[in-house]
Length: 328
Image (tube, rainbow, N blue to C red; front, top):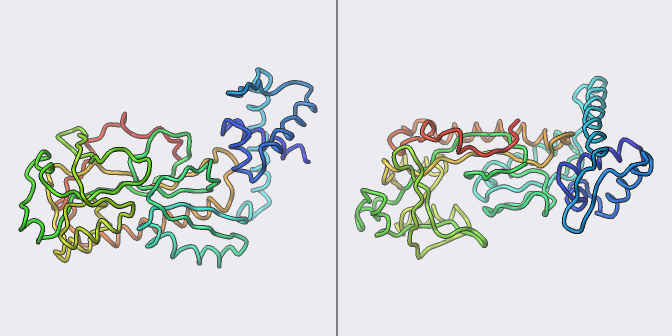
């Protein structure tokens, strides 16, 4: 096996923290990863990792070798790019996970075009509003729309997404409109939840801070589009990304409620676990997704007076609350 390939395995192992995780991301078994590292150690004549049953850690020599390997791989990438018009050719299986509604409307329609433009890419799309773990599920790239937790994943931000509490006029006529956050306890709240999710809570803006409130719901689903259907049918109040319900707000089929306490905004982003040597297939997908997603959101919000439907809180959230992703 070429020495440079073993170096790539080493770098991926350090980035992800285990042979198993590195193997999943490179379509190798943990045993093969261990063998590759062992070959490097034999060639170099020193141990690169201290291993125990619970953890693995670079030795002093391993740390020095790893840091120099980053420079070597960066030089190799520059050399490859200097003789290729567009760098490495996109190829291989691309495994993508995306939210159900956004995946159906934006991600799925663009994949056939990617395959036409890059026939050596094969796409596998997994739609779920549940957060699929990229490493354990061997996913190349994830599209997420959420308040993203701290992570070592690399994030490319697509858009800031305002959200709105909305209900049908028939529901408001029958049950009244909530005037304060506390009033929500007396209303039917339509909830998005999936196995392992936290309790039924909404995060709402209250002045300059985010306030979490537990709400009651007799209708819960793991598909955001179902919540929209229930809201249109007069079943309760739903929390939705503004662009997803913009057409219903324009038509009057849904109306905004509790506008002075809008839901905290979320981030729409594309994420992957690569920190170095990002595969061309991932970059190709991400570039097109960002273009298509922004166009979709702009078209959805076109002509809608967003300030009359929710109080945007973009300027109310301090930098300290932003996720600690590696942003590119």
